[in-house]
Image 1 (cartoon, rainbow, N blue to C red):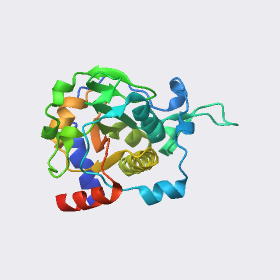
Image 2: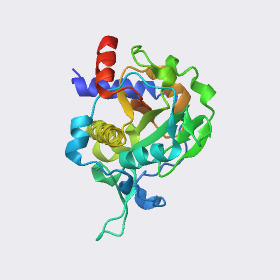
Image 3: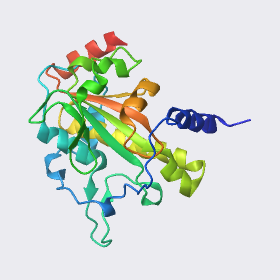
Length: 246
Protein backbone atom coordinates (compact mmCIF):
# COMPACT_ATOMS: atom_id res chain seq x y z
CA UNK A 1 0.00 0.00 0.00
CA UNK A 2 1.31 3.44 -0.94
CA UNK A 3 2.38 5.73 1.90
CA UNK A 4 0.66 9.05 2.51
CA UNK A 5 3.54 11.00 0.93
CA UNK A 6 3.51 8.71 -2.10
CA UNK A 7 -0.24 9.25 -2.49
CA UNK A 8 0.31 13.02 -2.36
CA UNK A 9 2.98 12.80 -5.03
CA UNK A 10 0.72 10.64 -7.19
CA UNK A 11 -2.08 13.17 -6.77
CA UNK A 12 0.09 16.04 -7.98
CA UNK A 13 1.47 13.91 -10.80
CA UNK A 14 -2.07 13.16 -11.95
CA UNK A 15 -2.87 16.87 -11.87
CA UNK A 16 0.05 17.52 -14.22
CA UNK A 17 -0.77 14.71 -16.66
CA UNK A 18 -2.13 17.09 -19.29
CA UNK A 19 0.76 19.54 -18.97
CA UNK A 20 2.49 20.22 -22.27
CA UNK A 21 5.96 18.66 -22.02
CA UNK A 22 8.80 20.38 -23.89
CA UNK A 23 11.53 18.31 -25.48
CA UNK A 24 14.24 19.63 -23.18
CA UNK A 25 14.32 20.78 -19.60
CA UNK A 26 16.91 22.61 -17.55
CA UNK A 27 17.39 23.24 -13.87
CA UNK A 28 16.16 26.54 -12.49
CA UNK A 29 19.47 26.98 -10.66
CA UNK A 30 20.48 30.66 -10.70
CA UNK A 31 23.97 29.79 -11.96
CA UNK A 32 22.31 29.50 -15.36
CA UNK A 33 20.47 32.81 -15.27
CA UNK A 34 21.44 36.43 -14.79
CA UNK A 35 21.93 37.75 -11.29
CA UNK A 36 19.32 40.29 -10.19
CA UNK A 37 20.05 43.35 -8.08
CA UNK A 38 19.93 42.62 -4.36
CA UNK A 39 17.09 44.36 -2.55
CA UNK A 40 18.28 43.38 0.91
CA UNK A 41 18.86 47.04 1.81
CA UNK A 42 15.08 47.59 1.52
CA UNK A 43 14.52 45.13 4.36
CA UNK A 44 15.73 46.95 7.46
CA UNK A 45 13.66 45.26 10.16
CA UNK A 46 15.47 42.70 12.31
CA UNK A 47 14.68 39.01 12.03
CA UNK A 48 13.19 39.10 15.51
CA UNK A 49 10.88 41.96 14.55
CA UNK A 50 9.76 40.15 11.39
CA UNK A 51 9.03 36.94 13.28
CA UNK A 52 7.01 38.87 15.83
CA UNK A 53 5.07 40.82 13.20
CA UNK A 54 4.34 37.86 10.93
CA UNK A 55 0.62 37.18 10.69
CA UNK A 56 -1.97 36.04 8.18
CA UNK A 57 -3.88 38.95 6.64
CA UNK A 58 -7.05 37.87 4.90
CA UNK A 59 -8.39 41.37 4.27
CA UNK A 60 -6.65 43.87 1.98
CA UNK A 61 -7.12 47.52 1.14
CA UNK A 62 -7.65 48.80 -2.38
CA UNK A 63 -4.39 50.80 -2.43
CA UNK A 64 -2.36 48.06 -4.09
CA UNK A 65 1.42 47.79 -4.03
CA UNK A 66 4.25 49.56 -5.77
CA UNK A 67 6.28 47.50 -8.22
CA UNK A 68 9.37 48.21 -6.11
CA UNK A 69 7.80 46.69 -3.00
CA UNK A 70 6.67 43.64 -4.96
CA UNK A 71 10.15 43.16 -6.40
CA UNK A 72 11.67 43.40 -2.92
CA UNK A 73 9.31 40.72 -1.61
CA UNK A 74 10.03 38.47 -4.57
CA UNK A 75 13.79 38.91 -4.18
CA UNK A 76 13.48 37.84 -0.54
CA UNK A 77 11.36 34.89 -1.64
CA UNK A 78 13.68 33.30 -4.21
CA UNK A 79 16.16 35.88 -5.42
CA UNK A 80 19.68 35.16 -6.58
CA UNK A 81 22.55 36.11 -4.29
CA UNK A 82 26.31 36.44 -4.65
CA UNK A 83 28.53 34.10 -2.66
CA UNK A 84 31.98 35.39 -1.56
CA UNK A 85 33.74 32.09 -2.34
CA UNK A 86 31.61 30.07 -4.72
CA UNK A 87 31.54 31.74 -8.17
CA UNK A 88 28.12 30.23 -8.87
CA UNK A 89 25.05 32.13 -7.77
CA UNK A 90 22.75 30.90 -5.05
CA UNK A 91 19.25 31.81 -3.99
CA UNK A 92 17.72 33.04 -0.73
CA UNK A 93 16.57 29.46 -0.03
CA UNK A 94 18.34 26.12 -0.22
CA UNK A 95 17.43 23.45 -2.75
CA UNK A 96 18.26 19.75 -2.92
CA UNK A 97 21.27 19.38 -5.21
CA UNK A 98 20.94 23.09 -6.08
CA UNK A 99 18.33 22.05 -8.66
CA UNK A 100 15.89 24.82 -7.73
CA UNK A 101 12.70 23.20 -8.91
CA UNK A 102 10.29 26.06 -8.12
CA UNK A 103 9.17 28.61 -10.69
CA UNK A 104 7.24 31.47 -9.00
CA UNK A 105 4.46 33.02 -11.05
CA UNK A 106 2.77 36.27 -10.03
CA UNK A 107 -0.76 37.27 -10.97
CA UNK A 108 -0.47 41.06 -10.66
CA UNK A 109 -3.86 42.74 -10.32
CA UNK A 110 -3.16 46.04 -8.54
CA UNK A 111 0.56 46.82 -8.66
CA UNK A 112 1.46 50.44 -9.40
CA UNK A 113 3.86 50.63 -12.33
CA UNK A 114 3.11 47.11 -13.51
CA UNK A 115 0.38 46.31 -16.08
CA UNK A 116 -2.10 43.64 -15.05
CA UNK A 117 -0.97 40.19 -16.09
CA UNK A 118 0.67 36.94 -15.07
CA UNK A 119 4.42 37.24 -14.72
CA UNK A 120 7.31 34.86 -14.41
CA UNK A 121 9.05 35.93 -11.19
CA UNK A 122 12.23 33.95 -11.72
CA UNK A 123 14.99 36.59 -11.42
CA UNK A 124 12.91 39.61 -12.28
CA UNK A 125 9.38 40.05 -13.61
CA UNK A 126 8.58 38.97 -17.16
CA UNK A 127 5.06 39.15 -18.58
CA UNK A 128 3.92 35.77 -19.91
CA UNK A 129 0.10 35.54 -19.82
CA UNK A 130 -2.97 37.80 -19.59
CA UNK A 131 -4.62 38.05 -16.17
CA UNK A 132 -7.98 37.30 -17.81
CA UNK A 133 -6.84 33.68 -18.07
CA UNK A 134 -7.67 33.20 -14.38
CA UNK A 135 -10.15 36.03 -13.83
CA UNK A 136 -12.02 36.53 -11.64
CA UNK A 137 -9.21 35.46 -9.35
CA UNK A 138 -11.66 33.92 -6.86
CA UNK A 139 -12.28 31.04 -9.24
CA UNK A 140 -8.78 29.75 -8.49
CA UNK A 141 -9.60 29.02 -4.86
CA UNK A 142 -11.74 26.72 -2.78
CA UNK A 143 -10.85 28.63 0.39
CA UNK A 144 -13.40 31.45 0.38
CA UNK A 145 -12.62 33.52 3.50
CA UNK A 146 -9.82 35.53 1.88
CA UNK A 147 -10.29 38.93 0.20
CA UNK A 148 -8.85 37.85 -3.16
CA UNK A 149 -10.62 40.65 -5.05
CA UNK A 150 -8.55 43.33 -3.29
CA UNK A 151 -5.27 41.41 -3.17
CA UNK A 152 -2.61 43.27 -5.14
CA UNK A 153 -1.01 40.04 -6.33
CA UNK A 154 -1.18 36.27 -6.00
CA UNK A 155 2.07 34.32 -5.97
CA UNK A 156 1.79 30.79 -7.38
CA UNK A 157 4.69 28.48 -6.57
CA UNK A 158 4.95 26.12 -9.54
CA UNK A 159 7.11 23.09 -8.86
CA UNK A 160 8.68 20.58 -11.24
CA UNK A 161 8.20 17.16 -9.67
CA UNK A 162 9.99 15.53 -12.59
CA UNK A 163 13.12 17.63 -12.20
CA UNK A 164 13.80 16.57 -8.62
CA UNK A 165 12.48 13.03 -9.00
CA UNK A 166 14.97 12.26 -11.75
CA UNK A 167 17.76 12.78 -9.21
CA UNK A 168 16.15 11.78 -5.91
CA UNK A 169 13.34 9.41 -6.85
CA UNK A 170 10.24 9.59 -4.68
CA UNK A 171 12.09 11.78 -2.16
CA UNK A 172 12.30 14.49 -4.80
CA UNK A 173 8.68 15.36 -4.12
CA UNK A 174 9.44 15.80 -0.42
CA UNK A 175 12.39 18.08 -1.20
CA UNK A 176 10.20 20.15 -3.51
CA UNK A 177 7.69 20.75 -0.72
CA UNK A 178 10.49 21.80 1.64
CA UNK A 179 11.75 24.29 -0.93
CA UNK A 180 8.26 25.73 -1.43
CA UNK A 181 7.87 26.05 2.34
CA UNK A 182 11.10 28.04 2.62
CA UNK A 183 9.93 30.40 -0.13
CA UNK A 184 6.57 30.88 1.57
CA UNK A 185 8.21 31.77 4.88
CA UNK A 186 10.56 34.22 3.16
CA UNK A 187 7.56 35.95 1.57
CA UNK A 188 5.76 36.12 4.91
CA UNK A 189 8.81 37.63 6.65
CA UNK A 190 9.46 40.11 3.83
CA UNK A 191 5.82 41.20 4.00
CA UNK A 192 6.18 41.66 7.74
CA UNK A 193 9.30 43.76 7.18
CA UNK A 194 7.54 46.01 4.66
CA UNK A 195 4.18 46.12 6.50
CA UNK A 196 2.37 44.35 3.67
CA UNK A 197 -0.50 41.92 4.20
CA UNK A 198 0.10 38.29 3.30
CA UNK A 199 -1.67 34.96 3.68
CA UNK A 200 -0.70 31.46 2.55
CA UNK A 201 -3.47 29.61 0.72
CA UNK A 202 -3.41 25.87 0.23
CA UNK A 203 -7.07 25.60 -0.73
CA UNK A 204 -6.83 26.26 -4.46
CA UNK A 205 -8.48 24.45 -7.34
CA UNK A 206 -5.66 22.17 -8.51
CA UNK A 207 -7.25 21.17 -11.79
CA UNK A 208 -8.09 24.74 -12.83
CA UNK A 209 -4.84 26.48 -11.86
CA UNK A 210 -2.68 23.69 -13.25
CA UNK A 211 -4.52 23.71 -16.55
CA UNK A 212 -4.12 27.47 -16.86
CA UNK A 213 -0.63 28.06 -15.47
CA UNK A 214 1.48 24.95 -15.75
CA UNK A 215 2.60 24.79 -19.35
CA UNK A 216 5.80 26.63 -18.36
CA UNK A 217 7.54 23.58 -16.93
CA UNK A 218 7.80 19.92 -17.76
CA UNK A 219 5.70 17.92 -15.30
CA UNK A 220 4.95 21.04 -13.27
CA UNK A 221 2.14 21.64 -10.79
CA UNK A 222 1.17 24.45 -8.46
CA UNK A 223 2.47 23.48 -5.03
CA UNK A 224 1.32 26.47 -2.98
CA UNK A 225 0.22 30.07 -3.35
CA UNK A 226 0.10 33.29 -1.35
CA UNK A 227 -2.09 36.37 -1.57
CA UNK A 228 -0.40 39.69 -0.80
CA UNK A 229 -1.66 43.24 -0.69
CA UNK A 230 -1.71 46.56 1.07
CA UNK A 231 -3.33 46.97 4.45
CA UNK A 232 -4.27 50.34 5.92
CA UNK A 233 -6.06 49.34 9.13
CA UNK A 234 -4.22 49.36 12.46
CA UNK A 235 -2.67 46.00 13.33
CA UNK A 236 -5.05 45.43 16.27
CA UNK A 237 -8.08 46.11 14.07
CA UNK A 238 -6.79 43.71 11.44
CA UNK A 239 -6.44 40.98 14.05
CA UNK A 240 -10.09 41.40 15.03
CA UNK A 241 -11.31 41.54 11.43
CA UNK A 242 -9.26 38.52 10.42
CA UNK A 243 -10.57 36.55 13.39
CA UNK A 244 -14.13 37.30 12.32
CA UNK A 245 -13.41 35.78 8.90
CA UNK A 246 -12.39 32.38 10.31
